[in-house]
Every structure is written in C-alpha cells, then in structure tokens.
Image (cartoon, rainbow, N blue to C red):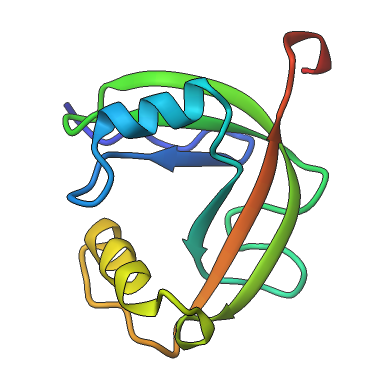
Length: 124
C-alpha cells in the first residue's frame, strides 16, 4: 500500500519498528496507555507539523504495509524539545528515530516529545 497523506489537522502517525511490534503499539493505543511520542523538529513553542498544546489531533496506527489499523482523537497537552544528546536513552531513541526517518539522526538534532490525552467521543 502507498503511504497516506496528512489531513488538514495535525496527526500523530505510528508504525511498527524492530523495537516496537504492531501488537504492542495496538495494545498501548487501544488501552490509552501511550501518552507521549518523540518527533523530530521544533519551531518556537510549536512543532513544524502543527503540534501545540490545546490542539486536537488524530493518532493513526498503520501496519507495515501502510494499512490503517486504528485511529483515535487526542488533545496535545504539552511539548518538550531538546537536542537528542540531552536524553538519557539517546542511543535507543536515536536508533528508533533513524528507522522512521530513513536516515541517520545526529545527537544535535532537536527532538520534541509530544504529550497528549485521549478524547471521549463527546469531547470531539
């Protein structure tokens, strides 16, 4: 399947990786235990893809073939940005981000941790 395009509102996409299989991602998102995700980049108090506190976004979980398996609405509650080298688990985070970016990630690149809470249907 072809990689889908982003919609008008911010989205947080998830796909399996060697460190995080689809079954684990599915369980974490279905149970709403995943509440933060690392993303590359930062611009002022926001993120280049439109992530900012208070924004409603959609989590979309895809399998290895870009087939959507799950989607949920969330509200962005916070963003913390630092150079990758500032994080204690830098090597594993660097490996995971490199996998998804398809290129090496340097320790000086900025990583934004996007925090979110799940919305009930009536909150959407």
